[in-house]
Amino acid sequence: MRPDPLSEAAARRHELTRSRAVQALRELDRAGTPVTFAGVAHAAGVSRSWLYTQPDISGQIRRLRQKTNGAGSAGAIPAGQRSTDASLRARLAAALDRNKQLAEENTRLHRQLARALGDQRFAGIRSGNDQGG
Image (cartoon, rainbow, N blue to C red; front, top):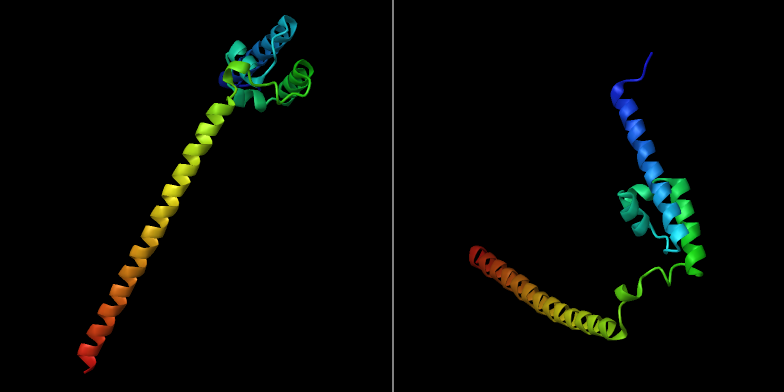
């Protein structure tokens, strides 16, 4: 029995995609460009998530990335995209301010809840006394 045309088309498309990814990977490596998932995905016109699902291709990307970057992870971010100390300090200060605001709001809401529960309890006691007495 012959495979259906949709399955054949899907298999051809998959192989073409794989060959584009492998070709892009080789070209980046040959050019001395840092080999990253994002770079290969962009050059091949595929998604990074698809690259991760291809064990042989993702393994080759990891090996080449380590080869070109030495240690690997520290140099993977281009200099223009790395955070500066000043921007990190500003983000930390903003996060600390937001944390302080949230803590204050949390305290205020706890007080409101305690007051509301106290009022509710008091109302229940008063209505209970009125009915019982």
